[in-house]
Length: 176
Image 1: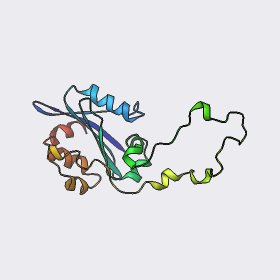
Image 2 (image 1 turned 90 degrees about the vertical axis):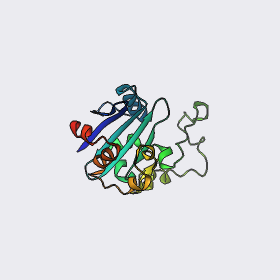
Image 3 (image 1 turned 180 degrees about the vertical axis):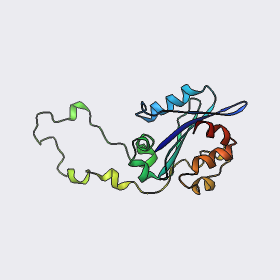
Image 4 (image 1 turned 90 degrees about the horizontal axis):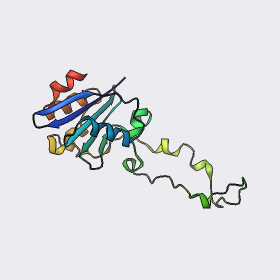
């Protein structure tokens, strides 16, 4: 079971709204959803899969989103988690995409490099993801939660604990 909510920091405190992620396919879609939900400076997208992993996406104005995921391997097995786990976040180089002029479109193997070994690429990305937190561990530091506190959070209670530290526990519970 998944839960997703938006927390927007306003002059009067935090405002919460639950959100559906059914139409979200990319991190850009998620960032746009957060920006549309509030014209405030800081919006947090909180996502959790019950007892498996949680993620926090922070959108500050027009800046690039900041992301933290509690368990990369668990999130990698989740459609919502895959949205958050960018190559950059996982420390991987993006797949090289050749330009059209360099592609061998006649079906022969002449265009392939001699040292190419397709077996090395199959499933490598799934194997490389470990059960460790990834992302910006200081994502909530200026809001009152240190990186050490964030790392100590336990799946299942994490979003409630984050909301409590931010002073947004009551508003988050209204959308749960």
